[in-house]
Length: 128
Image 1: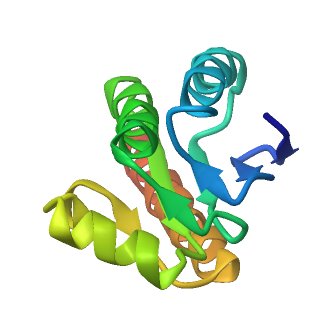
Image 2 (image 1 turned 180 degrees about the vertical axis):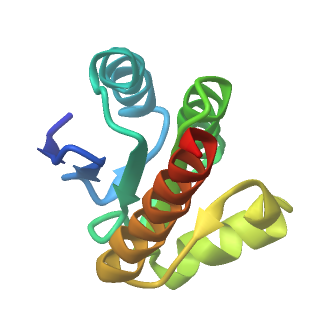
């Protein structure tokens, strides 16, 4: 499975290059997420789903895996650029409250930047 990965000091953006997150690509996607989740040393992960037009239960399972990986290491996962079908699937599955979902990639970057700013402010307060 082709993944586009862009990394900064504060976040990484992973963009799956496939129109489907289904049982044919999910095992490979999950293994890539585990490797990347352990290798990336950023505070946040943005999952840009702009190319994904379809997901089944195994695709949702992949997203939940990414969510758990980041939550368990006190990092933040943000989903963005969701196709209306994917958004509806998350809603029907009652998973929208499990994820941080924003419309655009720029919104996801801003969201993580705001978290970094808050974290930096807390660090400054601790030094006093």
